[in-house]
Length: 137
Image (cartoon, rainbow, N blue to C red; front, side, top):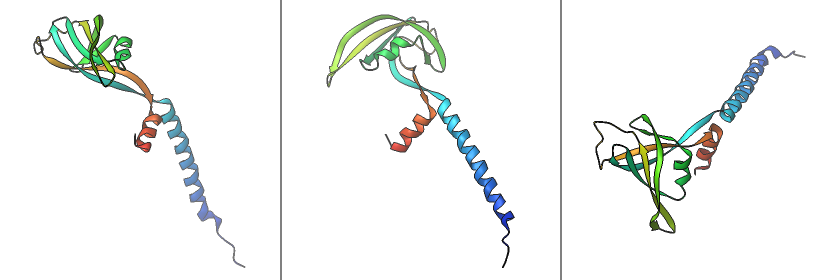
């Protein structure tokens, strides 16, 4: 009877062990890391201290919960100056005009220019992003 050499299987056991440790590490990383999700909209500059944004009613809470936005990678603090409701309605969705008071003194930006505003929307867990990609939504 021949004796089998079990020392060759020790490498497989180490591989299974390190793979399991790696999977546990990836689980913790994807479960506890959150990534910011941003909402981008366009606005019209009315003067040095006023921006006009047209936004629908579903995205209105995004503006209310933020106190700053980004223009050209610069953080700008703002206050809501005025909200004009039901300016435009399309497919049973109401749009609002919001006037934002802020300080955007720049030589590049002039009155009636259109700029992109980037607002922080929410934080999303990394595994939710992978789940969305996997489902294809």
